[in-house]
Amino acid sequence: MTDTPLAPPRSQWADVWHQFRHHRGAMFGAFVFVFLVAAVYLGPLVWTVDPQFLPRGRDFLDLRDTRPIYVALWDGGAKVSWAHPLGTDNLGRDTLARLMFGGRVSIAVGLTAMVLSVLLGTFIGILAGFFRRLDGPLMRLTDLFLALPLLPLILVASLLFREALAARFGPEGGVFILIVTLIGLTSWMQTARIVRGDVLALKEREFVLAARSIGTTDTRLITRHMLPNILSPILVSATLGIATAIITESALSFLGFGFPPDFPTWGRLLNDGVVRLSSYPERPIWPGILISLTVLSVNYLGDGLRDALDPRIRGR
Image (cartoon, rainbow, N blue to C red; front, side, top):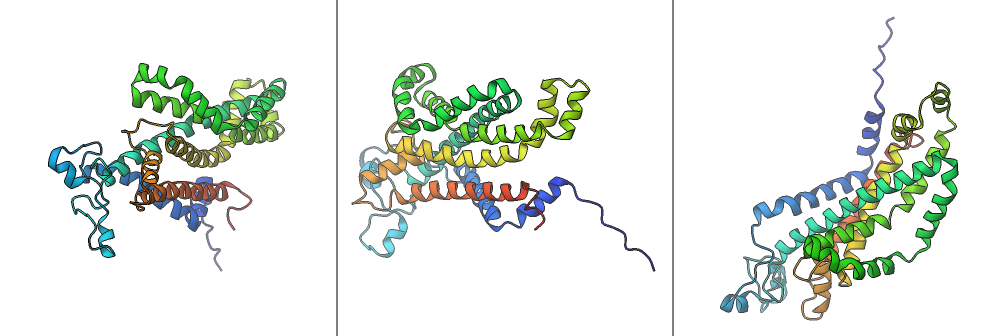
């Protein structure tokens, strides 16, 4: 009787991928998010209409306020144009092109603000968890930020610094820097608390105590032993941070504190659609659907990553 050879052990990341791809919600979220990113970044290569093109003269009268082509299914007298399948706004600008352009802006804001908040939260969490003397002050600072009404605070800061940044970096660049900075500086607290808790637990582990006993410096302990072992919760927090940043940017643009009116984002398009909701009820639907799908897909991604990276769940 011959022994059956044992299969070689899989790596940790192979187990993570195995668990992740069997999570239906995570795979759905990954597919939707990748599709949306590809659509908004690669779509303009196919749909080459300028999102800020303003028709003149007779073209303006013909192109303004056209309806999506599907409206003709129940309204035979609707003004539709196959050249603009999702219609145009009151200035004759193509809705599909503006949705793709606005998606690039909204997703770029979400990703950039997420990176800033995760870096700041990780830095503060490691300092608070590793250095006992800094734990109290940094956690009280975190509690203070958690207690603040963040959206009103962002609105006030936007009014105070908007003009100065616009004069320095231009209207669009200045607002982008302002919104990303404000969102990043007001959304790091959850990451900091998660990282601090993990660092406090890791400090008492045998491999950390052994490294400290042979004279390993604090910097090397953090970079070689702490950071690799807290990567999992940081990744989960990062995915959820994208959703938070996109919602916050959309809320700011909807309230009129975001990008300039001629610079489309999903929140700005939602605001423009609500203004004429009674006459054109379909206009706020598309930006609302895209915001919801993006946030939902990112949340599913975060849920799948959390399950895949948790050793207590992996392998079930």
